[in-house]
Amino acid sequence: MINTDQKVILSGMNLCELEKLAKTLDEPIFRAKQLHSWLYKKCVSEFDQMTNLSKDFRAKLNEVAQISDTKIKQRLISSDGTIKYLLEFSDGSSVETVLMRFDNRPNLTACVSSQVGCPVGCVFCATGERGFVRNLEVREIVDQILTIQRDTALEVTNIVYMGQGEPLLNYDNVINSIKFVNEELEIGMRRITISTSGIIPQILKLADENRQLTLALSLHAPNHEIREKLIPVEKKYPLEEVVKALRQLTQKTGRRVTIEYVLIDGVNDAPEHAKEINYLLKGLNYNVNLIPYNSVNRDDFKAPSVKKVNIFKYILEQSGKKVTVRLERGSDILAACGQLSGKEV
Ligand code: SAH
Ligand code: SF4
Image 1 (cartoon, rainbow, N blue to C red):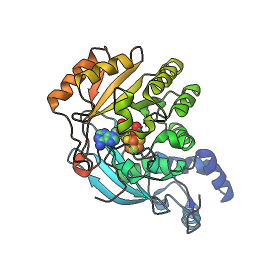
Image 2 (image 1 turned 45 degrees about the vertical axis):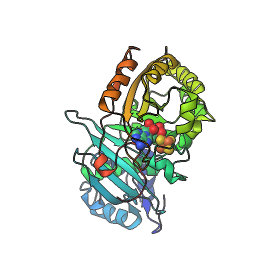
Image 3 (image 1 turned 90 degrees about the horizontal axis):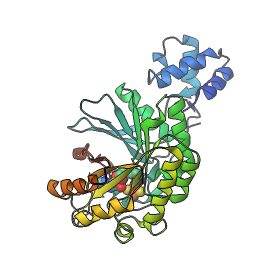
Image 4 (image 1 turned 60 degrees about the horizontal axis):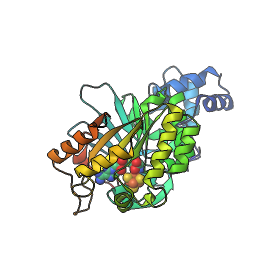
């Protein structure tokens, strides 16, 4: 809560914490609601913009508090409208947060990071290559969304935990950040997606807690042999077991899961692989999101041709499930899936 200047950081405080602050500063309790609205609805960056607060109170706030200490280190705008932020926290570590707008849709999706770096180390991912640095705090996760809102004056409507990190390896902070955006920012559970490489105990925990958010599994291979070459965590949590955990989750929550599948030419994109997937996932409530491989830094990997992608999609559709190909967003600014490395570009 306290930064190096010993100022209290307000962004990320819930209503109850703001009420305590108002009390400490000898202000009436209703001031907390006003502050809450300026912080999370109107998203201003300065106390002096909070015009319905008395001058006196604003002066007090300027003295003892600060709205946020998250810094925008770099902001890149893609030709498709995607904005990639490189944000820096008070300890100097940085992560990316991406804001995606899709044509003809009112939704505004924030892709947030849950860790600095990632311990999973998938061979096709720039974040994995960076290694693991640390977990993000709840406040650091929610301030990614709030920083975007303050910067753009736009309201984020959907959140995907698909930035840096494996969200289920920072379980409590991720769940508490979801609780915050749900309660304080009023973003519905159904508009929130967590993507995981398949951490079984936490998938089962999520199932037990019966949360109404969407879980996306990074499947990326039709079988154990191929998957263990791409995703090291497959050795610990083999895909057959992961799929079993998904079945439990969908039965418990009634929610459909999303299967993400990065298509890499000549590695996991053969027609027989698609058939194997249909068999593996039989009876599960799911849809599939295909992601043609985005260039990171492996010369030996490339995306398949459009024709190959379409054949793969066609075979998957024989299962009767919905299959989409993920629109590539922001690849000209290295903001696409797998391209987040925490470095300036
Ligand atoms: N750590 C989480 C969320 C991360 S990113 C996870 O792995 O699920 C969101 C998706 O992008 C994941 O499915 C991830 O596997 C995928 N991805 C990673 N590197 C990629 C690349 N180079 N090209 C395309 N997709 C990639
Ligand atoms: Fe981590 Fe996800 Fe990248 Fe794998 S794809 S290294 S789990 S961020």
